[in-house]
Amino acid sequence: MNRRDSLKAIGLTAVSSAVLLEACKQPENTNDKPIPEETKAEAGREQWEIDRDKELKAETYFSKHEMATITVLADIIIPKDDVSGSASDAKVPEFIEFIVKDIPEHKVPMRGGLKWLDVYCFNKFSRSFVDASPDQQISIIDEIAYPKKAKPEVRAGVTFFSRMRSLTASGFYTTEIGIKDIGYAGNAPNQWTGVPADVLKQYGMENVKV
Image (cartoon, rainbow, N blue to C red; front, top):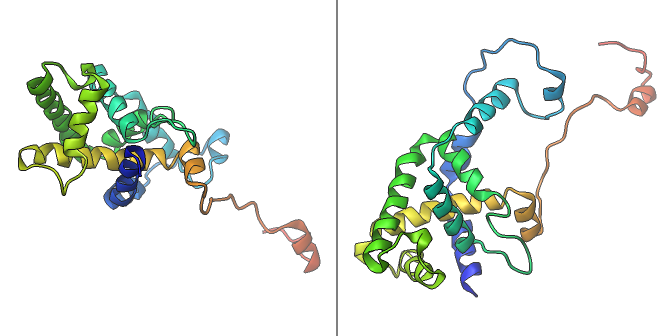
């Protein structure tokens, strides 16, 4: 198993259920405004959800340097290969930016972890992580990617990278690229449009109005 497969495998088993559970929480809907026609086409979505997503996407949390570091890390975890595109090809960094704003509990651990990574890399190679060579970057990742093998002095990095890996896997495997990589899409939601006309006709109810 190569590094890409091992990092992905750990990521899949470590995907945080809290991320999925929190993302599914729905606050009380107090919006009584009519739903626009363009919204009705989105099955299972309410207007407050769409409005909230737009607000979150309009906000910025990570700096350009932090986003660049997240992109490098995501592509180390899931690089492009013969099967699929990379994490950045699937816009995983943008997903992570959104999730961190959507679930604020990620903000401090992620920003703190990125800072730790830069400090650790600077102490070893006199440069930030994103400015380090690919070999230098991988050498640091190898220190923090495998919790059972990691040294106590990099425990903070292990905790951060585990979170980063979980978010990367969550983002990648909910995109078209990631689904194709797995080869199984699972169940997909549909939109109820009423009882089919032939069934209504069969029971003599084609002219019944509800």
